[in-house]
Length: 253
View 1 (cartoon, rainbow, N blue to C red):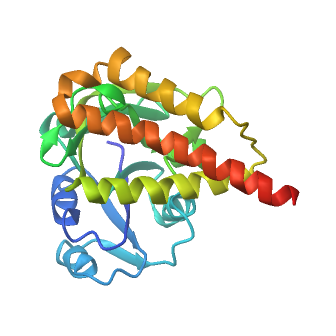
View 2: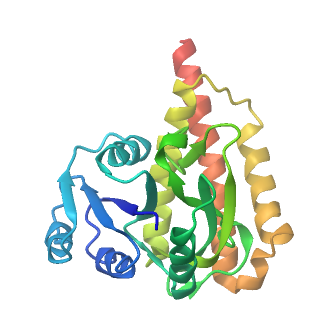
């Protein structure tokens, strides 16, 4: 049976980290938590679960996750965020994979909870995630927001059943603040990569993203929260490219 290392990065995650770690029992052969010096009870909760806890300065989501891979003693990694947990069906699927692992990476669906409601449509479901993988076959990238594990060409990738449960935001205000923060980080990463944004770029991206998620991906079926999620997602696109335009203008001065 293939051994698996579970890796998690944290900062002030006392609300959900216990649920996350509990779901890994009997699944992961070792659990590594890389914490960015949390000021709440995150570290204490991790210690109670007997995980390997490492304190490491935060320089970006991508950087932190790539660092966590270097600490794992096993080749195969199960990467979770602190506000995620394995569903019962996903646990069974991973245990079956461990018996006879045949791919370099495995996708599964993520089911997102927004303000107490499980979102079943728009870009929020099935929200395919590659979270079980051979760490020698890729790395996290390309930017520090919505980073993904990027497999090298010709990697064998499969899909398994079950949902990764994700508790996103407990309030609309928290969601709005996170949108601002993520948009700023993404814009700066795009600027460093040399990307450009023209006058109509923010509006075009905003309108297309809303139309895609609300209508083509049936976000309207999730009711008022579906509208809010799709609208804020569109707004994040507008903010990201607006900030990028400003950075480009300032660089030309």
